[in-house]
Image (cartoon, rainbow, N blue to C red):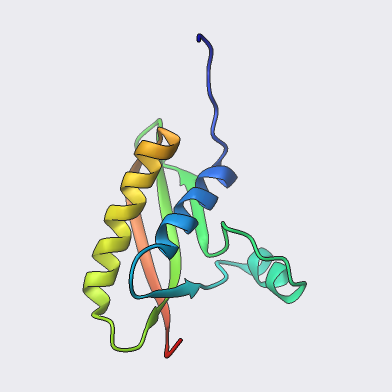
Length: 113
């Protein structure tokens, strides 16, 4: 089959959010901005919550991903962050065919959940 496949930044963010949730030690995602906060208040859960994907201006054709996560109390945070980075890089490439130039994981909370 010939043609082009386009994966939007929103779809890529959803893929990355779901991939991050699969990592042991991740309790959930935190709102990445006012839009996510309002959606959470309104009860609209989205797979892309806590994920911001933008084109990398320094590297055309690649993206930068910021993930805002809450980790489980007792988890080794550096290990969880490394695992998130690996899982998200793999998901972007294998599931969406997208290249990430950077994955920045922001641990914004710790929970007993």
